Image 1 (tube, rainbow, N blue to C red):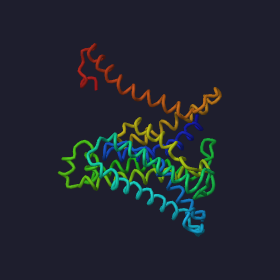
Image 2: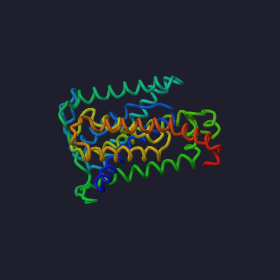
Image 3: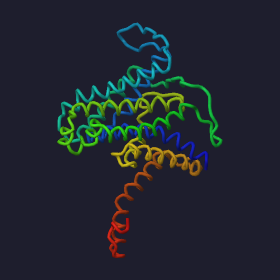
Image 4: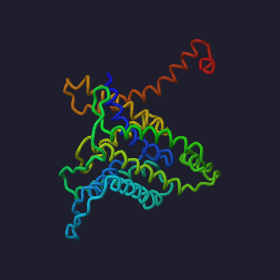
Length: 314
């Protein structure tokens, strides 16, 4: 059981980082973005170019080779690049769409993901690429060998989830983000421009996806076009499980899915079910959504039968 929990926490930390990006964008704009997985993958390619000193795959240059740079430099460049992509998308697409239906903006994010995917195939091809881990070595926890990068992913997810929530609730800019999607008038009352909030949340969401991609890649070992989008789908589900508008909830949702996936892999792998990760995600997601609909009704009926008001029961 200890191994299931440890493995679940490791996976859950990465899912939580993706989920935090989803919640940031949705909290500030009311939009579900589907592009950040591929934004994270694009950041990985840039980091690998810088860290491993690849040849630059550009048709108008004679394949010059970049000097190899330290991992932190490549990682920082990847995060800044991803944040820049998020901000650029907000400036060129989201802002021009104005007050469009959030569904229309969500569809536009699918277009961005496909554009990045096509660019990655064109520049780097289909063959798997590698990015060296920032720190070597392992630590044994409950019989599981855990790398420092995996531990960093979980710690960072928890710190960001609860830390960002505190910032949002204790600063005028944070309160503006909390109110942006529901009450734009309240945002103006605290003196924060809506355009600045939108730019910030799109950039922050993309940066979080790049961080998650950088931290999970050493565990898998290789990556290619579309690599982080598969994990990002689970991050989307984790955000929904956590309530979609709660940063700490995104962490809880990611850990919940991670532990559920780990338990299913441990105890159900013998049944030969393909796509077990997605089956687990679907089951947990449906259970949470159905529970949110049925539990309040059941409690209300219980109160009616016992003759007690809801306040007395609480």
